[in-house]
Length: 51
Image (cartoon, rainbow, N blue to C red; front, side):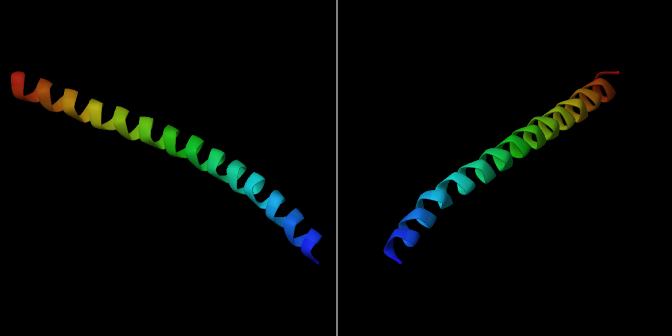
């Protein structure tokens, strides 16, 4: 019983790490996309105000 518990505990962090890795990758891509959108909006607003 204790061996099985230790084994499941060892396997758990691996699953957690892979899930976090996927989540971070998705988060980074979403973050960069939102930054690009915000940057484009700022540029468009600057062009409108300057012209």
